[in-house]
Every structure is written in structure tokens, then in C-alpha cells.
Amino acid sequence: MLDGKVKDSRYPLSFHCTPEEGLLNDPNGLIEYQGVYHLFYQWNSKDCSHDYKSWGHVVSPDMVHWERLPAALIPSESYDKDGIYSGSAIEKDGKLYLFYTGNVINPDGSRSSFQCWAVSESGVEFKKLGPLFEHPQGYTRHVRDPKVWFDNKTHQWRLVLGAQTLAEQGTILCYSSNDFKKWQFDGELFDPDEMDKISQRGYMWECPDLFQVDGQELLLYSPQGLTVEREQYQNIHQTIYLPLTKEWQIVPENGLIEMDWGFEFYAPQTFETADGRRVLYGWMGVMPPEKEQSQPTVAERWVHCLTIPREVNFHEGRLYQRPVRELQQLRGEESSFELMRDWESPLAEFGSEVCLIFDSPAKEFQFEVTTGFLLKFDVQTAMLVLSRTNWEDGEEEFRRYQLNEPLKEIQLMIDGSAVEIFVNHGVAVASARFFASEKPRLKYTGKNQGHGVHFSLLDCR
Ligand code: FRU
Image (cartoon, rainbow, N blue to C red; front, side, top):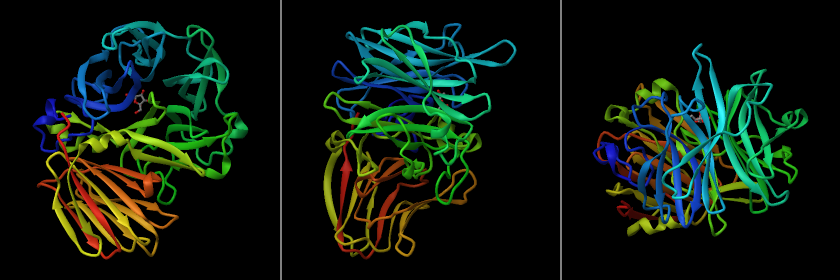
């Protein structure tokens, strides 16, 4: 968006949503309302800490060109005085409703959470309507992130929450409403037998999202407390997708699949566009506090961004994520190159899109985004490897993805300090930030049959 602090940043981002200043985390309240896309996000406008959360707000006619609006919700009431936490949006009877969690620090230092709502007729100013229901019994105060939708099968409103049981295990709570006012607690999404199908539970589940795409019920959630399993669950927290049956039971053979194998993707949310597409935004991203505070943009008083909008599909048991087609409007000058020879180009001023198309299954190659940040393909192990020099201690760090099919195509969306990599039409996706000390140069090295296409992206202010 190239405004606010980011405009003068050494690490500018032009087509990723950033805060004007301060800290951004989860995408919230995604909706197409009266023909306009509304994107809200967790925002600490005061500094780069997680101490104060409001809902930042941007709007767009096309998910490409954005306009900033004033914060939609800021802490003000007894039930949300210490933070407006994550949630979702619904249009009903021409009005825009926001559902969020009010965070409260009590005088004795303990915390409470309240599930709240607010309404708007303008889509700009919101009136708070207060808490929706009592805190459920049997759970710690870690109950949050309401996602609301209308269930066409039961003709009811549904609401799910991320939660922690008193035994400190992650779970999801379900509510329903016939009249959009009174909410009934329907218990946990999964009973103990279902939970047994999950190899690792973790101590808290955040930001659940339950929806249908291509006839498949899917649950996305962001568990905390998973331990590393080979190349999986390497980040501090992760996001998992689970295919469910129509009765919301877990399809066991799938296991816990991470939605993004990069460094810091977390807390995504989806919404349905008027033309029926399921679109996702995630946060880039989650990381340990020391790493966050040493992120180079903190010195410039802003930190983090959202992913680009990704269209989500489901085919033959697998989730696909691809940049929404609207982003093709940003394609400017186009050039192509052969994958048989090395290729090099500076990163374009407003970012570059690069597509590598392999005519036969890819052999060894490497694609450098900038010094110290590269994507490699290791044919021996069929492993994609992302490596970068860590800004915290200067060490190299890696994320790996085991590809169980021939590598045919890679699309890279490269902004000034963020990259998103879509493999084989989005069946595997990796996102990561990078902080280059000099102007990044893109370099392909390898000997493959096929070609690459480079688009310099246009200014999308
Ligand atoms: C996920 C999360 C949510 C919470 C919000 C607070 O990143 O921890 O569970 O609502 O961030 O900013």
C-alpha cells in the first residue's frame, strides 16, 4: 500500500497490506459488503508490541487497490477495554455486523474474554452491541476469535470459537442461533473419539474457520504447542487444514497438514466473494517475541503484513491456494527466459511475479530472491528447500517441503520484503519475509527444460 511508515521504509511492501504504523497481526472481518471488499486486521497503532489491539480497516473495489479508513473498533468498554481481538463479519438485512473478542485485564491481573458484536450501516463507523453470551463453563479464559456464518442446511446462524479446556488442551466450541440474537452453546466441535484421530492436540487452538469449498467441508485452525515432526511444525505456531465429512467428522487418512510451509504464516481467515470464490488472507507473521522485536522494520516503527488474497480450492483430497486472478492487473512489463540457462534480473520497483514452468519434471535448480534468501529443489530427496539468513543472529535457517509428485510449476509473488511461493498450482505454498541490505536481484540457476516468465508489477496505490 506504500503509505504511512512503509512509504519511506528500507523494506517497502507495495501489494501486501501493512499497518500505517505499529504492529499488524491477524486478518479479521473479511467480507464483500455492498460491492466493496472490507479487510480488517489486528492493529496496535501505538507501537510494535502486542499490548493494545484494535481493528485496522481498509477497503477495496478489487482486492488490489486499497484505501485506508479509520480504525473500525478500538478498546473503550468494560468488556473490551484491553483489546479488540480477532473475529469475523456478516452482512444481514443490509447491515454489516462484526463479531470479535473483547480482552479484559482484571484488577487482580487475571484476564477475561467476552465474545462481542458491533453493527454499521455505513461500513465505516461501527456501534458496539456488547457481549453475545456468558463465558462457557469448563474452559480457561482462552476462548476467542468468533467466526460466524449462515448454515444453509439448518437455516441457522453458526459461530465457532478457538478455546482451551481446563486441562489445557486446544479445542473448538460451537454455538448456534435462530434469530441472530440468542446464541445456544452446542458443545465442542469434536467429541473425544474424533479428537483421538488427531496426532497432536496442542494447548490452545486459535482462529477456527469452518466452511465448504468444492463440495468439501474444511476446518482451518491455528494450534499452539505442537512439536516438530520431521519437516513439519517448524514455526513457533502453525495453521492446519482438516477435511471434514458433512457431519463434521475428521477424515482420518489426511493427518494434520500445514497450510503453508514457509517461515511465519498464521491465523488465516476466509470469506466468500459475491461470485462464489473462497478467498483467504493470512498473517505474515508469527514468530518468537525476540525475533519479532529484532525484525528490521521495528526500528522504523512498523512490523508485519498480511498475505496476498489467495483463492482456495479443494480437489482429490488436497487443498490448493493460488493468488486471486485480480492480482494479474498488476502485471506490467513481461519478459521470458529459458530454464536451460542461468537468468538474472533486479527485483522490479513495485515487486515481481516470476513463473517457472518445467516441460518435464524439474531437475535440480535454485532461485535466489536476494543474497541469503533462496529456494532450492533437491531431486535426490524430492525436497523443496527455502533458506534464509536469519535477521536475529545471522544464522541460516531452513524450511523444507517433501514433494510427493513431479515438480511442474512454481509461481513466486515477490514484494519488497515478502515472498509467497505457489507450487504446482498451489498444492503447496510457502511464505516468508526477507530483509535485503541492497536492492534484491532475482537469479535462477539450473538446467531444465522449460521457460520462465518475469512480470514487473505495477504500482497499485
Ligand atoms: C492469533 C491471536 C488471536 C487473538 C489475536 C490477538 O494471532 O492470538 O487468537 O484474537 O491474535 O491479537
